[in-house]
Image (tube, rainbow, N blue to C red):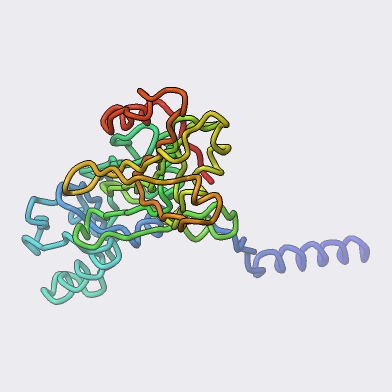
Length: 308
């Protein structure tokens, strides 16, 4: 009997300890939909899910009007456009408390449906267009939806948020994996993403590899650098008859370039500008040397573009 009583007492102690013990909560709690929306601004046409805890009569789904207002029972019209969900919750709570309707109201606001759920991706991407996204995504996700950037893409990406159309944000892309993390900024539904176009210099004519070469961040590029990236001039090239075709506000300009003197350091190495076309004619064909600027510009449409 004594052993049975001791066993019963041990079980009672175990049950008591389990009852008073605090549950262990994991630190890695996934974010709730509400916390994920704290930085998203409410826009016109959005469908809001408003819940007043303990008062289901005041909980409803409302559509934001074109002026940014919503109609709420007891409160009336309230301007929520441009506010975050947390700011809207605080405003509703204060209105319910100031009106004497509830003593300690607890209100939650959730964007149930975005009026503009698409993000516009324009500029130097493979497939420009409007892509539907539900909730916030990252810049790299959005660029992936558009098929990635083209070979002519620059490093700068402009992001215009729908709630701040007059304040575009510029993000600089980088080929460095460590630096690219900071460029992977959030993109919200309704935003517009524009990938800039990098400057391209074309080298065509009697060279080893007629191509276009991207000027990273529109950095400086000289005639010799462009010729070197094109694999150099062929032995049949007419170096003295080379020229740069440049488009400007005044029209097309032809600038004579003596590659022979530049190569022998008897003439300065000229600086090229984005969009310039360096044409190196063939010495054996005088007709090629006399080729017009318009025809030379047409050649650039068929050449490949490479990054340095």
